[in-house]
Image (tube, rainbow, N blue to C red; front, top):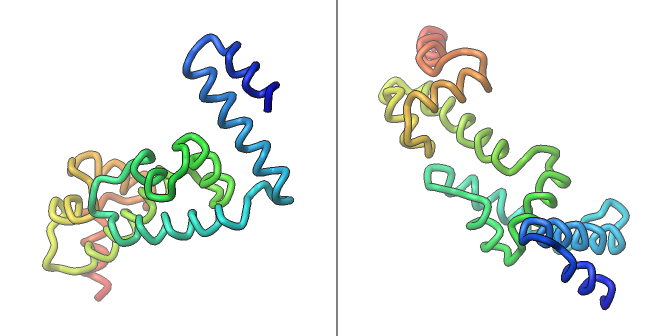
Length: 149
């Protein structure tokens, strides 16, 4: 512990100190569980995934989610990626895009409404992300879905 504090005091910047702190947390976690994840951490990831699924339409960010499970945001981000294999941001986008695909299959919703309902405040950004993830624009997806009904 003394060595950790001494190394922390030698950090030249807050960013360097934060990195040192996160590295120490990951190291401690690796010592407590063979895959580097403590049992309690897994419950935190499950909780956050459920929170995202229930609140995908709202503004969600790393700080807010880490706060929900009382973790340092940097540590939580590393932990989430280690557990899920993708970044937290990519996970949130995937949940939103999957929900958008559901909404787009419903003829009552317009593309701009689907963008808003799934947490994208900008229809152009929504279309760009949707095309990158799905391979077609939301409009094309909607037209194909309606045609196949």
